[in-house]
Length: 123
Image 1 (cartoon, rainbow, N blue to C red):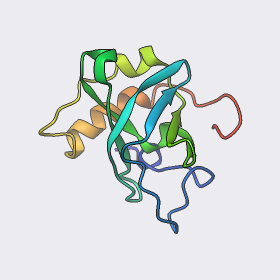
Image 2 (cartoon, one colour; image 1 turned 90 degrees about the vertical axis):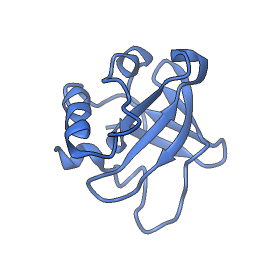
Image 3 (cartoon, helix red, strand yellow; image 1 turned 180 degrees about the vertical axis):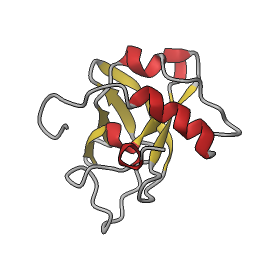
Image 4 (tube, helix red, strand yellow; image 1 turned 120 degrees about the horizontal axis):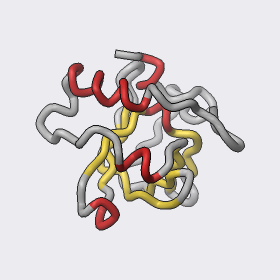
């Protein structure tokens, strides 16, 4: 597993503060993708589970914490450095195994292929 992929950036999320983003809307680089069902904050194991609603027919997706570029508590939005298509093409969410290292390795291999970048508060 790639631990850096599963960590929030220090300028995005401070491990010393308490902030729960469950229920926040998620914005890809090209538009809204859904809302957060679950978020974790463990060092080296952080991720978001996003319910895509009608956008991908009610499916969920797993996003590594490193994809998060900005958290806006006032607007209750989380911004990620991925396009809608990149998220749609990610490995299918596995409700029963998404916490298992083997599944997260597969997701990590997929997201690890993309460069980070673009705009303020991003990689």
